[in-house]
Length: 189
Image 1 (cartoon, one colour):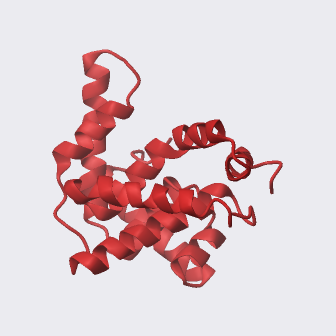
Image 2 (cartoon, rainbow, N blue to C red):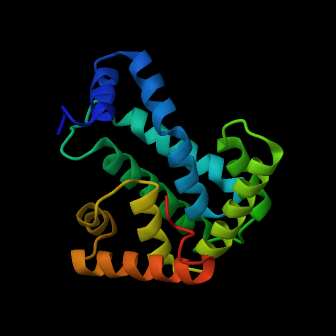
Image 3 (cartoon, one colour):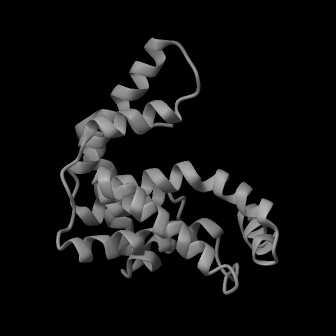
């Protein structure tokens, strides 16, 4: 596991006192983990707080970290738990989706290009945000853990506390529904 997971190696180096390893790890994982939190929390005002709490927990857990799974599996478990904590504290499951913030995030993640290319990326991001908001929560979580978190179906099942077949079904239904809403080729990478 350690040999094929460069992020786990960075986390182990950080636990041993190498601050630069943490900086590299954070830079490698920052954008995807922020998008994951943003798409689950769906509250622009709370996203940064939940994201910061997630990384605070990573820092606080550095001495206990053991690479028994991919680092991203561990990170997204923490992020998912932080989102659940946010929902419990706020007394609601999710807030209204603010599409303009997703468009800004998409534009920020877009490498410099011409205005037309940026507009296309922003529009695709907006359409995806609307489609994700239309999914049942269990399917949205499954899809985001799989796509943003890079978790396998087995890891997805473990993360969400369901059986592998249930996790696979949630993911399959999410993809089918997104294809229906966005068009069959919209999810192609």
